[in-house]
Image (cartoon, rainbow, N blue to C red; front, side, top):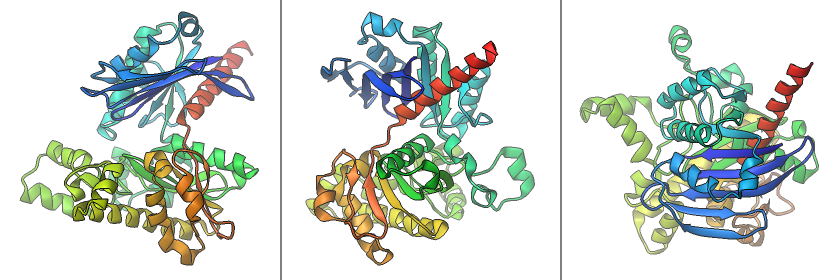
Length: 400
């Protein structure tokens, strides 16, 4: 089966055409549009390895997807047999599902919990259905990997009637990325997935940590929405909910204004006052900007605190796995997160760590009691595999 994957982020879209078989997968073509809006840039790699990079007019995800599809040769486009979409919040849908009108309504409703992500996903789905009207499509959810959280980790200490009425629970997000890192670590370690215990860190503009025991998620930092947990590019992560009611009263904020504050004006940007981009802040710190230094220190401290908590949750930890743009490409941040953890048996190897900027590999010393790895998350591989598996089961069921 040739499956197209569509991965819409808050300001980017990644597309990959994969040839999927029961026991193997290969990439036929792929590309991405970054900084969707006035400064959008398109990258594309064809099946023969040729790469292009250029500015593109892409004000929203649907336009970005159409621009990428236009670069596929006619034969490749005609070969598409399925499309798999990453969806952050699917509401009642918690396992991969074939997209129909009911699923689309659920994705629309999910915008209340994940406004930065579900709206772009919906745009991508609508554009795909228009461009490829006869191709079956599958939604693969970020929350699925966290379905295994025990109740004591997934529920809030709120009145039960409110919990049941509104579905108030910790759904967790970035699950596709955390699952990808878990499965790839098991491959690299030569271990069965159901035998590994890890702390996986997805560190990018959005950030999350997950405790993985025997291959399944048992706790994760994001909760009812993607706002909870680690400090992020423009989101605060954990904070006292009393601070929110205080701000509502004292600043006379509307709910929409509070959402804007928490989603767009907090985190690294809020502390530094200049940027939510870690590479920019590291440069500013080197130039002597104290607020950039404060933002970076707070970021690393928050990640370190979750690592310590998840060591307590898991007991046995085989490795800490870094993924996401910051986790994969910033040796300095990995060093500053891990060096204070040496008393817990985590020892970064300076040379190994420094050379890992986008590639996978071990960044801890051989004598480290808990290993540290950099493993770029491959969400597209998981989306393509889940799309293939679901449609294969559906086809088999119809023929049985």
